[in-house]
Figure 1 (spheres, rainbow, N blue to C red):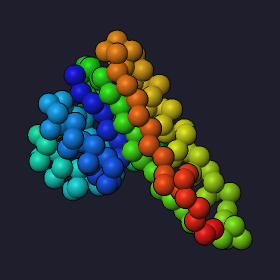
Figure 2 (figure 1 turned 90 degrees about the vertical axis):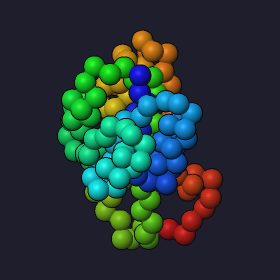
Figure 3 (figure 1 turned 30 degrees about the vertical axis):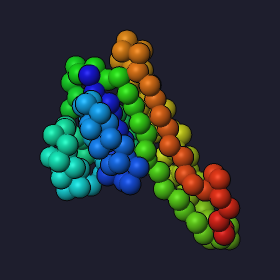
Length: 137
C-alpha cells in the first residue's frame, strides 16, 4: 500500500514524504517539476507522476502510473497564494484558485475514494498560512 502525496516537491509535501518513508511506508509522489520529483523519488526510493492538477483529468495520469497499487493515504499539499490589490484582480484569478483548491482536490479524492475506503485510509488537505494571518491585499 502507498500514500499518495500531491504537491510533493513543495516544502510541506517533501517534508511529509520524507517523514512517511522514514516511518516505513511507501509513497507515490505527484508534482509539476519532473526534475525535482525525480530527485526526491530517487532519494526516497519511490514512484512518481509528473502532472499539473489544473489539467483536465489529471488523476487519470496518476492512477495509470499507480496501477492496481492500493492507496491508504492521500495528502493534498497543492496550493498557491496570489496577493495583489483587488483593483488588479480578474475573474480568472479567482477561478484558478477555485480550481486549484477545490475542484482538483475533489477530483483526486473522488478517484482515490474506493481504495481509501477499502484500506481504511485517510485524507489530509493542507491550506495556507493566510487562513490564520492577515496579509496586505
